[in-house]
Image (cartoon, rainbow, N blue to C red; front, side):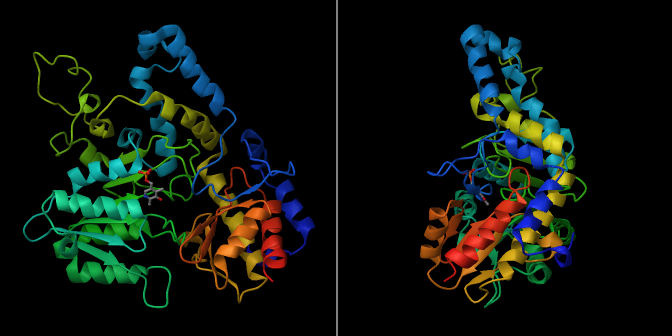
Length: 427
Ligand SMILES: *Cc1c(COP(=O)(O)O)cnc(C)c1O
């Protein structure tokens, strides 16, 4: 469906919902209620996804196994804890376009960024820089800067940052290309966000990877805002590594365990430098410490694990990934484009002197998030949205982020949101 087909009336929104093949998935999530008893319009799935109803059962199952089996839960639990991370491989690999042995669930996102830099950032005398973008999520900036310092490098020399041009909000691929042309020979690692947390811009990850590889750089992506949101083909794109959290679009629950992708060309290489721990070791020799005390990495993404899987923080993700598997990323992305396109179209019908969408409009350049730059009283307007039952967030200095997600948001919510924005708070 294109913008030409959209109509502004409320009945049209209902029609879109009736025709939505994914509409039943909403019923499988807990949706917070307003004081009035009406469900909120939850547009914060880019920050913390809603709780799948089935999550309670999976977590309870683990608690039951702990109560009844104690240490035997490692092998006799419903999902044995010893290999708990393995059940996520296939469904997670499908979502990011990796092969199952290229994907592992471990730690949290920023920790994984550090671990990936340990392996993939190998500075030499002539090639020692990291290239990232602005605005980046604070944790990524802190991680990269402190990581450089622990390697004895000064971030003011070793960190290159691509900025939006003056008067623009999003970065241009051609500026990254120009930077790689000029300085590529000195760049060891290109580390970019697949989808930017602030603007919602989705980069051409395939194109960036090719360009960076041509210059001899390694390429990693932070997919916090991309995993479960936009189509990804990490294996085919030859991305060296990627990291993502699972509590945003992937609905894994607060602080849930993060994902990590390591392309098989590297994952198989057990000689790559890394921080080892018993779970990254070959299980065959894991307990033979007295005869084989050396660390022998597993020849796949699991070889980067350090500790045994945190079962209770992984459990809810089983419920969510089952829903992703059932819905399928193709159908989710298709609905997402229509839903976000419809919301954009509705917003742009009204009050353009106050509200300006800075998320790029091109189909391949965004996921579900729209970042709305508010020209006056941004904070007050955000508070008014909250008061009207919309859960969305505010990012300094003047951006309201809204993320209609295809799994649980409706077209009628988009209509209602635009109505509130234009009529109630647009004055
Ligand atoms: C959400 C997010 C994080 C969060 O990091 P944690 O280690 O999970 O706390 C980091 N980077 C980006 C780009 C994010 O969007």
